[in-house]
Length: 356
Image: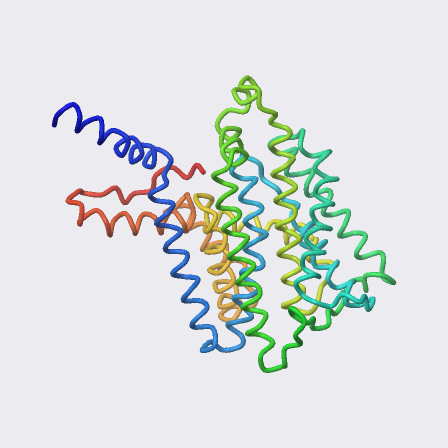
């Protein structure tokens, strides 16, 4: 190759090397696969029974909360208090419908629940952003248990342990019939999930996303670089709280009932469970984990109503032993094994690092 040909080929070679270094090739493949799955979910929805539509709707709503947990996990922060934002978003929707506010559209109500949860996260984040490790996790648990106690004690407002019923809301000015309610809610939640997941995908590739990954690796070095670790954690925490409120609002619209258990510490622990179950290697992993988790829990309860938690624990142990990176890492291994023969290589199908 002549010097002129090398000079012409250099920019393309540099772009390819940069794409491989940033993982853009794999990311674009994941996006194409996600778009294909989204199209399939849209097309097959009218053929699915009502119970399955409801299960997927709730799974997608909880998957958004888990996505918020994963955003913090990518900075080595474990939050056991996302039930706080989940309940804040859900109760905001329930209060709005119960008090007969003029706003009865599901899109506006969910947006309102998201803003309330984001405001709560902005307030709590002022106290919690300075802590790390076990202190971060326990302090987040303390805040959510405060809300749980208030929801129990303020019976005249929250209904206590009975909770509140959320009447069916309209959607974009239209009131779905009883026959189309489940399908309409499914499409609504699916559309929001797709948009928010794409935004999270862009966030992970933004300076804030890379800064959180750098904090995971070496927080002190990030400070030496001149970046504010506390500001990065605070902003991510607010975004994470908003995702929790969004998931709670969607769950309230789909289920039609809210209860104080949404803010209990076991609810927050469930979100962390699903985050580890699905993995942190991609923004699509929480959705995969949430869907599989809901199916496993429902069938485990059907097979063994009194020991279904034991079955869930066994499934998590198996995933940790054979796929420390979660279900997403297992999926990546299968894809890698399928591609390796075509490339003539032996392939590395074993688990790589579970580090985000």
